[in-house]
Length: 468
Image (cartoon, rainbow, N blue to C red; front, side):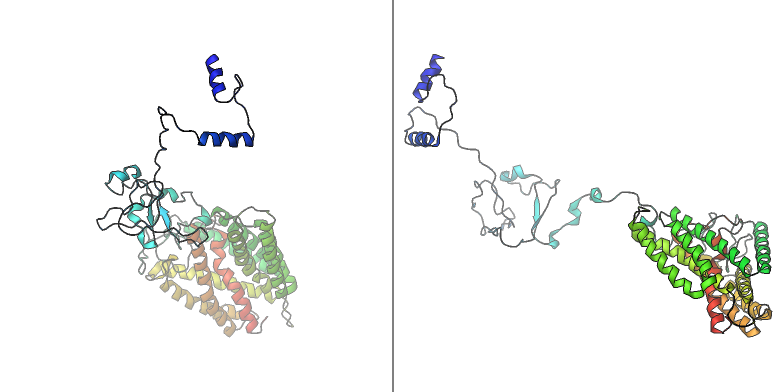
């Protein structure tokens, strides 16, 4: 303690006072007194501060010998002797130069010079887009989005699904298909038969549907309207279920209510009900997702909801328009005849195309969408549908042979288009059938796909011929 007190006395402090806080004047006087003090002869000067790496300036130009023009070791960012002028850094207020570093951790040292030894694997720089070397970037897999995407968000799916076969049957060539295999199933001009289909069961189901249709037709237009509404609503239920299976989240309840409203609305109010219901369902579909009733991506799901409604609900509602009592004198129950004609010709076209395609179909009609449909089946079905229109439908009041022929020609074109459109959607989603509601046929959409296109075509053709 005595020694510490003597040392404290020699430095101007009171013995035992320890650390003392001084004012500004006293601190200034102490600094001036210390600055004028001469160092003692035996006093050891403090060591110099350790040298820090120089501040690099970019771009770094290479020397004629291939080495770096400005190796480190020149002090605290001072210029070092070397070829070429030292590049000046722009002022901080000036616009950016666009010089971006690229970090390559595994890059070896830029030079064998010992001065660069501490910079092994350091940052390298580029001045323009052409200076990038993709081969040096290494594995960039860490930047990839490896999260599994499903359904509508799956960007790895092709424009058309790879489901080209049924029941593991090999896909046929794009231009020629063979047709000698036996089997069952429905279709418009298919070549090879679908294995796994029970023809007997399909025929029995078809006959049962035809008998049910004729019974309701005999009861009158109102009963036919109820049957049509039930079929269209359940068809829409099937479409919404398929969309959910594909990863979409459509506004199912809204679409079904709109479909049912449209089926009865067109029967009571005619065509005036169509724009009203379409506008309402469009607006309320947007509000459905805006209010968060369904929390999902709004863009794709609004589109999916409207597609299912327009496909089944809007096109199917033309059955109600055909059944609506005619405003022409003496045409009170003609609506039943109109709907019977459309259904009959669609069924004839579908069945004949399938049988003809099985018998001698060779050339695929649309191999990318439905490789089992053939041009030969389409041609035979076209002729058969036109003849059926003139010979059978032409005998039904208020049709004539000319009107029946015209209707047969129209349905011979639009019904296969409806079938192909449904096949396109199935290929995109990756389904064999839309459902299993009708054993031997698939789902309701598989059975009534062509009729959905035939109904509006029938209505507008009859309107053009001034029949409705």
